[in-house]
Length: 248
Image (cartoon, rainbow, N blue to C red; front, side, top):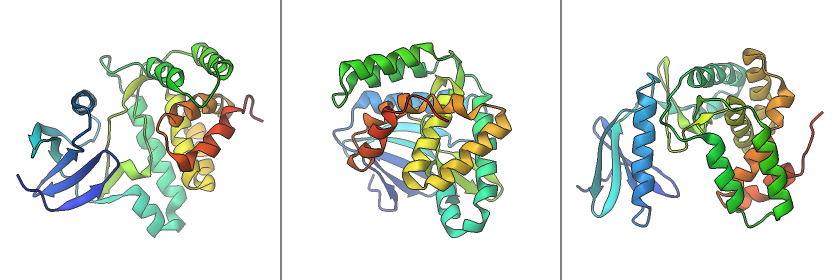
């Protein structure tokens, strides 16, 4: 099948539209196991009843693996925030409500978030063994939860279709501690705009009655995990957060 209607292009895949179907075509060198894992994660999350695109097919298109799902007509929350800066607070409130709904779900077959973070931290070459030990010790001491965590929850992965909000890109989905998921969202927002990140964290902690300090204790761990993405433009900020032990 020849796909022509490109709607987005990322590092590992491009997304095309074919009528009411969105087809995510992965790069030729992208591992098959990663594609199948994404399809499996998405299917498991779909079973929780959350509003997400439904996968219809995993296939090979011109020698490249592809995942087909229903196309959601709308704008990303990121676009809306840029177009309507006066509504940022309202958007943030709804975003937090959506994340709390995700955290209310359970999916016992998803991978454990803590196990994934251990692997990520151990794989890093840019920090020494003492720092790794400190981070792994902190991680080991964190409460073990089994809440559904998106793993990459940010405005670019939320589609607003009229009054309904859909969450995309469940490749990093896992089960674990909600505050780790929140710390990652805060980190991702901070890389784009610190003020918006602070609004988000304040809103989440208020709505969930979570101590801000508790979420912040996850930041060095989440920053270390994010370093495995090898994005040069993020490295300085992430390395700085690795050295933060306690927050005021």
